[in-house]
Length: 256
Image 1 (spheres, rainbow, N blue to C red):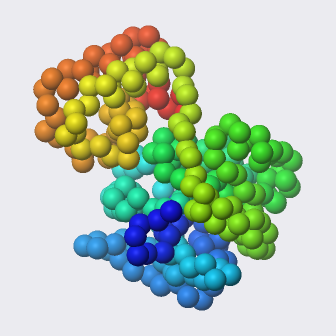
Image 2 (image 1 turned 120 degrees about the vertical axis):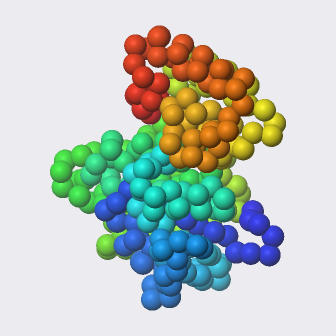
Image 3 (image 1 turned 120 degrees about the horizontal axis):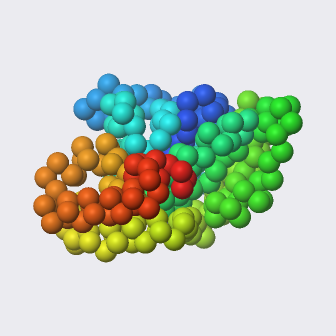
């Protein structure tokens, strides 16, 4: 279920102003502490909570719009996410702007970390006349979706029940299939990654971000890329861009 001799780590991640910290505080109560990430001035909030005799480490990461940030502070947060590999992620999204929020969700699913989508501010969505079927969204994304109103405590029990169920049984996450031509290029890039290549998350996530020119990944691993692998990457990108008549990063963004 978890790493040996430690309590499960649950990370809260979401875009700014999604109510993520409100949800965290509703679960953590007054026990939360604020610390800097090692060697940085970037702060995060964390707490150890006991829920009906079950202990969890919960960590509230600063808001981020995507897993390919340009902001240095967000990079520190995401490096922590990649290195620590939490037992479970609460991806908090603003239900009233769901379309804008799901880009980060899809990136997290590509990482294949266990994810529960927290459909927060569902009351605001309802007031705007936005109808969301959580079960249908669950089926589309392949991960649990729990509607909440964190400011009122609505849905928190259901969220924690889902968390414990998935921590105990294991949450299987499978990536979302894209159009065939894009999938072919991702698989081609994956197949050419050598065994000693510094993978971030998993091979698929790494290949996707290499193709889309992820600055995070270039900073981390591609500065000294093998010339032969660089040729493969350039070829894959060129094929994709020729087929879609768009830059590779736009093709990937459109697929998401």
